[in-house]
Length: 125
Image (cartoon, rainbow, N blue to C red; front, side, top):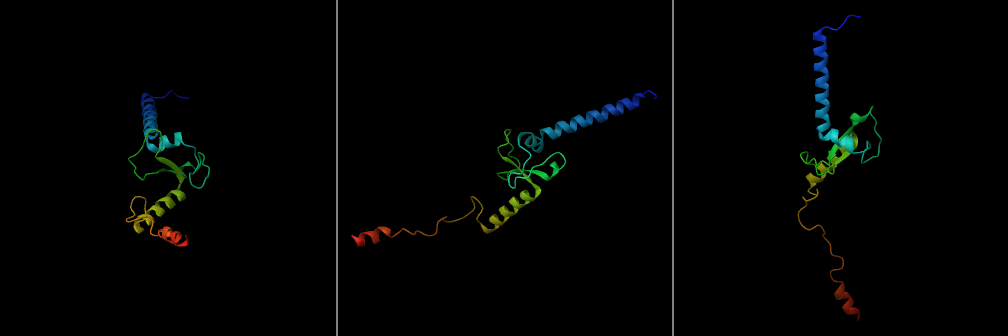
């Protein structure tokens, strides 16, 4: 086997350096951090994931704010594609109907079943 040329060595060094840079970038992303902190299980359906199907597991922001990425991962939940899509679909329906958390207008209770109970009880005495 012939010895490597200097250009082959520098090319290999560049490839290794690029790989290390990409890995460091991925590790610092919220997805990389979430996958290190949380078990690889869908938080909704409970499906287990491994390195072969890990690409089907997504990071869901519980408060729906993608800029809220605390270091402890408290705003993240791992969900499979299907459960993540379902979560966002349910939220979209709730927002369009005005029932999303914090968006409903008016009183949350519309009936007062015991409103006149004191009057009824006084009449029985």
